[in-house]
Image (cartoon, rainbow, N blue to C red):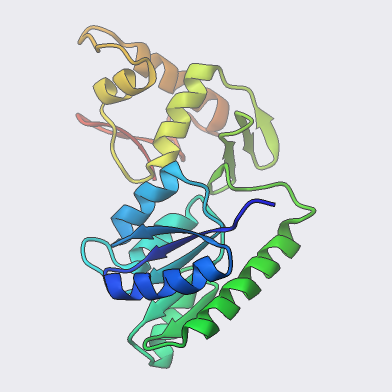
Length: 230
């Protein structure tokens, strides 16, 4: 059985160093990040089984990071914070965290909670298909592993290019992508101003996933800029 991989996200190096000692004694593999942005970057490259996530960090705090992570991933998240007020705990758990510990903490208690969350996660998912590769936008589900798209449970047939465009926009929800940037990312070629290939593909995707392509619910047009999925 592979070693469980734990991602520790904290801007205090001494805390990560301390946790690392106990994690390695338990046979866990450790990954580090100093803030939420670094954590998201690690998750793009690594398979992580559980995240220990500090709240107060520079660049991107734990609350925002947790919300971003929960858009596409469901591994256990244990939040750490120097704040011990009930409302702080409610806020942390309300963003999608599974557990909450206040600093200073007993490392042995943290290890016990990590083990408990991993057992619970394994038990809940043992008979269920993994959702790690699924991106959900309302009732639209995009499976990046099987390249399946389902709308309210009904399978939608997309071409590989159409799927790549939809995945790109859905994976980066809220970000506006220009036609040039979409083309060069998906086709991996230099974009020519006269090329309307992206617009044609967007229209075809909308015809397949939108109830009313003229008033799209998923792929929005930002006039003069590009497209986005909200």
